[in-house]
Length: 181
Image (cartoon, rainbow, N blue to C red):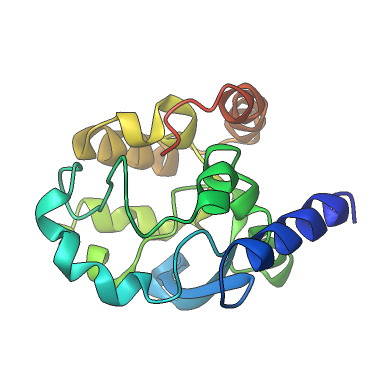
């Protein structure tokens, strides 16, 4: 309810900026490798996933993640929604449905998990989260090694105090747009 005005404004902006649906739905891998459909506000052109292969050589991330500073698939409004993390707000519905938690490792794409070793697969012991240790520790500005280390540390050392600390760190990270691309 509290996010409704922000979501409504974002939906209008997305519709005015580009053709296609407001919400983007994508299969991700959850706890115990269970697939689920994650919800986000659409920040890219409608055929973005089909165009990913042509951009593979421009990937700036190491490991199975794809990151590109000036991704041509991102819309004008999408850039703003991404750096402010407003595009992530529909994931609150995923939390209410039980697919995700507020805090946890980033929900992975199925093809990403195919490249994981047995150690990294341990991150699937917990529900994925909207925010997490990796997100408040640099997000896209960190390496895949950091991503792995931070997620596994979280899984092995989970506590309510850790979740509260991560939630508290999330606010300034989002407001200062740290690591957002």
